[in-house]
Length: 303
Image: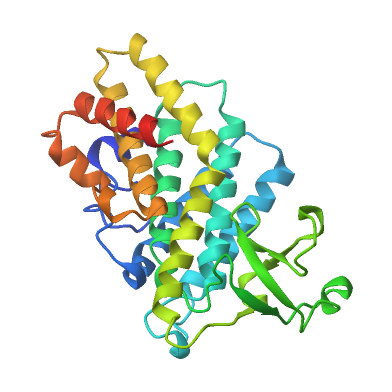
């Protein structure tokens, strides 16, 4: 893993282009399909090596397996170059669960290559996935009415055909929280997957709605990992005081900071924050220490 970080490429059998180092994800929307799969495959290897409860690990590995299969499946002709809302949201669920697993299993350990590398891969996978949201077909938008359909469970079948208002995306479960009646309290709201919602679109509002949905989903993903952001920043700042002269430590931290910045920019969706992780390193003249400090200052201001 140290070799992967220093050389900016992949090791082992994960077939991802070595040119995409330092958080470089030079694609828009559908082009992310070329890299999300390899990122998820790498995360599968990292998760398998985590010293955590086998039940928790098995759940995350299952989520990753389903997502990997979805990204490698033959394209749906009806979607064109886009992806389904179900695949995009399921992948976000898998990546957020990976981040939570990494966070819980290594909170008391230093940020060595064995910890940094899975985090880097996770944040870049999250960034790539969120960038597909705007082209995702049928993505529900908060405030939008949708019809529930296709639920198979006994409790779910009673909801089929009902209209509901979409409240927000819940990245930890890969579902959307919906409210059936205006007077329903939050405890009565339901979590429904994107493929079981039929959004009602106003005439001519498809493009605008897609952009709104992408921004809202991205920000929900960012909120879902905010605690992990904060803890990693604190760890990097604390360790930097002790490892100021260790070159590898600077490389690890700058690599992680650049990946976190990439995820932050993609999830927030603000075009005014268009600086990518790879451009941040270039801006710093390749100075790992400067990159690390600058990235952390920016992240601290926005997290």
